[in-house]
Length: 383
Ligand SMILES: *Cc1c(COP(=O)(O)O)cnc(C)c1O
Image (cartoon, rainbow, N blue to C red):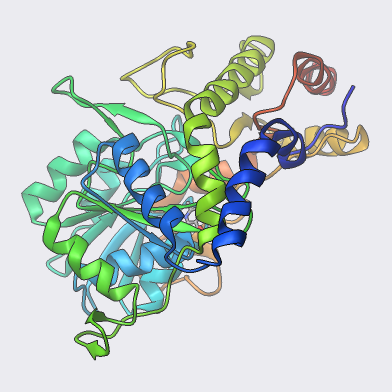
């Protein structure tokens, strides 16, 4: 059996070496390291893949979130609602821009932001909602867009973990994650579903005017050379990363399918066991099938109940099986983001999840033998 890795980028590279090396070599030969043709072509190819009017490449997913918020013209003191259960980058940029983060609880089945909790957190100062499509599955965008419309709020999708996932709305229209809100941010960090070989990110929007604003912000606030109309940042996707991404984008759907098949195999082995809850799919597509793309399993995350999580984690470790605890501490309890306005009782779900979640190895190269080994160890520990 191959050594089990949390994410197997080496194994994946072996499969795509020829395309990737050729693409990177073109950049080396042309020396167009910044804003070269690969960056422009990647932008267009991703726009086509997503069915979105504008993709603005940038340096990483955290920048993408920050620039999206800058582009919307949010002002210090504006309140931005986001999930208590996410990677810290989401709340970090809100705080960094001196906006006021308002953390709310998530749903126990999908781990995604709870629309009812959003509703309760709205005040006259609320300006935006940042749903995070956690672990590869879209938040309840029907409900979120409805709340946003009612209260005239912006919706900034954090799509760092769900690129390639789709969402079928109440109206039956199917769209890709990151194309439903006013603007979205994604990350091409190597371990993400579409990862480059360094840092990278992008912002998506269907709004022409906002896209123009964002293109200036990523480039020092310049719309005309050496005219700085707004305060911007320097945030670029470099050509070598774009070259890697161009080689990998045509494989994204196949990669996401491989993740889904691994998830299905995990589910088949682990469902129906007391003390284990396998990942739940949201209402619009309840079953994992070859073609259902509502969940792209950035992470395959179990809930292990009744205090047994840490024993399972220990046993996995003893057997050389890597695992992740995403996320062990709810953001409202983090020193940097705690706030006297929060009441711990409003975060019952995240508090529980922090003690129950366990993410298993998930990548495009997992094989049946590895999944069998991992699930056998878990079953032996639990039963
Ligand atoms: C990875 C991630 C980010 C940040 O992306 P970077 O490219 O690492 O800056 C933001 N939000 C979520 C939910 C993420 O998983």
